[in-house]
Length: 360
Image (cartoon, rainbow, N blue to C red; front, side):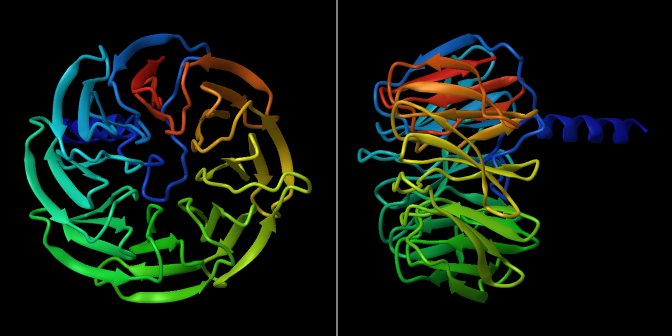
């Protein structure tokens, strides 16, 4: 009985974490963790260099990469520095940490993938790819997946970084792979949606996405949702192996770089048209839009019917998922292209002037 209670407590604690980019391997951007209805700034950490990496929250710590080339671990409760691991002089870009089994994984702009002890900040192993890494890692059991600008998706052993398999594509693997049912899905810069078996790297299928895609796919009910550089949003059926709908704003023709969040039958993402878009997940028809003052590259997080998203106008917005009404905004003072992470009653986001904000 005591073992069962401990297990349930551990599962409850894990549910309060945001251990990787978009919160989970399906990249839905949705969490069961809750936030206060009225947020306030709890602490700010000054990093000095631009932060485009999105934070991970796990085990009472915040992990985030910076353009200074550092992987930073902060105490979630206080914002105090736990440790700093220097990865590279050329910086960590949009690659966001993944935390699993006491290890933090992240890629850098030199093309090196790092495994670092979550408690110690010490390097456990590194793996060199052929070009810069902007993709974020996804841990699947005893292996970790990462994409590189050398047009390859890598599967590495979490134990020692040995390459278990590599899958070559026709262009950069910029986005993060989404994983469900033992299959990794990428919607990439080569305009192809691919399904790859995680166990052995076999490509199970591919079909045209119809557009260059920088965003990562969000998976719900065997459908992948992603925005494209052809100024539209696509829903691809992984069962039918085809795009089943596309949405394009009738007037504002701008790319979508933000990765989608999917909840309650709605697809929410930011656009470079300064809008946050909400679409019907079944049909692609617009439900609402919200106008910010600059492009929105940040990817939204959804908790309890609320959408949290940054904008390059320097504001974090809280919107009602059902209506798009603005509930609150926070002035960060610099562009927010990183995405919010939500865990343990707190929201964490980094800004392009090197600050990390914690609200709760």
